[in-house]
View 1 (tube, one colour):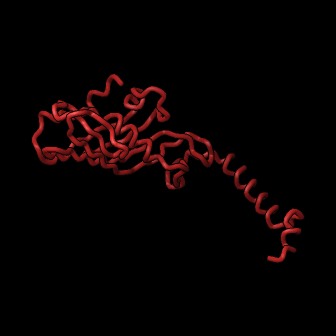
View 2: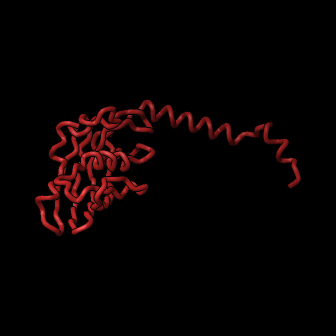
View 3: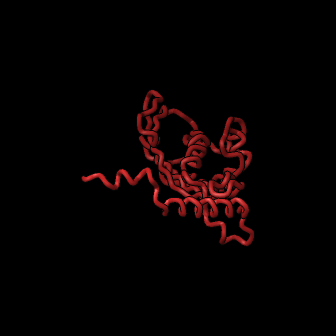
Length: 177
């Protein structure tokens, strides 16, 4: 994870209170993670860092796009993502992890906090399960029109078959429930 030094917060050097940071997750950011499923993206991460004596509250706001394959037409798209996440950093004598993924513990003398891994994970959590969006609003939609026509024809064929009588279900219709 070399090259991610800019995603470090110097917690010893800043006073208590609210501090704002802004980070960019781009091609070089994703390349720093081995076996990353995202290779390209342009995500702006705004971080509100609230430093308290025994606790740090980090509020991440993500907004941008990631390059992925469209689940509808299989063409590469720049999928818009937008999300917010909160991370609590508690100070303790021993660094440990709690069962809650949104709470971590660090030693009180820790001079800086590396947040690149959290940004990486939050970007992945922001990607929807079904990767499609309304690309028809763009000047030049990236859609594979041949694939969309094929899907439309297949859906029509399936619905035509569903409307017909299926002998498999005829026996079930006669059951008395």
